[in-house]
Figure 1 (cartoon, rainbow, N blue to C red):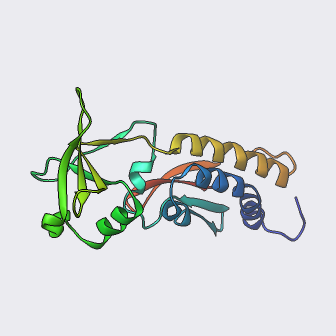
Figure 2 (tube, helix red, strand yellow; figure 1 turned 30 degrees about the vertical axis):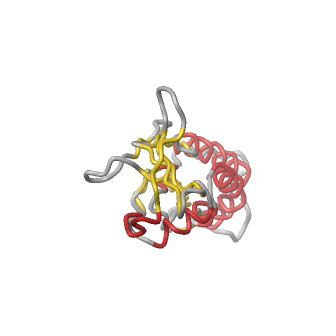
Figure 3 (cartoon, rainbow, N blue to C red; figure 1 turned 90 degrees about the vertical axis):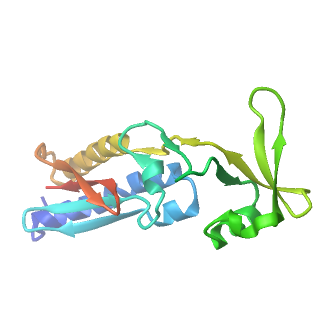
Length: 193
């Protein structure tokens, strides 16, 4: 151990020096800029040690669909008495969807048509005179999570254990604890001593 440096500071420095790879790996798995921009590691030194908290998709309402404990997919269905979800087919449709609370606001500008044949034809909303396809209407969407927090937890545990052994010259930190902290509507792995 280094002289003149407190144990909590050494623990915090070990976490800061090693958990960046875990953060980069999680961000690499996430789809979209908003989820990546809302993913951070927070460090806190305590009198007994130090903590590190990984928050994924902070402030992003759909983060809990992309990041879960386990690999079970999430099925998204329309709310209320609606039959279909409108999935944007291009950037203009995505912008249109973000500007209004309901596509019904566009009334006669959007025209539904069946596209495809056979057992599973799908419904498409066209804009204007029916030339530009804008939205695919589907009864449900199944989203597989991009990040399994069980894997992140295991990776954090292994990474921090190795960093502590290096920082403290081989001393065993078997009492290091991983907690399931609740934050921003979803579970986030966090390390504490």
